[in-house]
Length: 235
Ligand SMILES: Nc1ncnc2c1ncn2[C@@H]1O[C@H](COP(=O)(O)OP(=O)(O)OP(=O)(O)O)[C@@H](O)[C@H]1O
Image: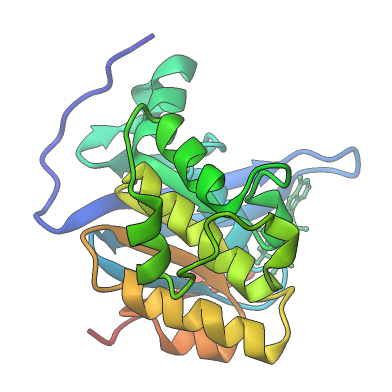
């Protein structure tokens, strides 16, 4: 295991990506999923990775989540060059600093635990404590602590998934199309939650092709064909 090299990151930047490239190697030949991506992700507010299907959004989230080792370029996370980290160090960073919210609400929650137990389990996983009632009130889910997950709507389940990220105290929350499997009413619950999260002391990075989600972005990185077309700052 290597401790990674500390480099000076500009204040207010959690990820620095430089000339990043990711290839996949299916039997049909090499697919370049990302190429020459240079991007800074601010340590607060919402950064949206926007683009059509196949543009590389999920791959970029996998890189930020330290699941994917890029073939080219560098990824600096909080001043640490992640390319120099061994498997255990990457896993520890992932556990202590990052939370993931997936498209399918049920992939984010433990279905045999109650709502409050899900929050406690999320906190326990990083050896911290949380106050479920307080979090549920902030999420507009007050009174549901004793409920089974199946009693929540899809939108409420996604709200709880973001609540679990809050319970873990992660400095970065990565969300892949968190509204894509929800009806309009449920999606609106998630958008409201993201507006609340945007005010907090962490970075939220969302992959989206839903215009309502894209409009929430403080920084919008537009991808096409694995390359970065444009970065728009709206904060
Ligand atoms: N495991 C894999 N093996 C081979 N090719 C892959 C793999 N995962 C992704 N790709 C390819 O990499 C490119 C980027 O895919 P990616 O899933 O990152 O895009 P995306 O913008 O998230 O798409 P979507 O919105 O459909 O999820 C696409 O050409 C895709 O087919």
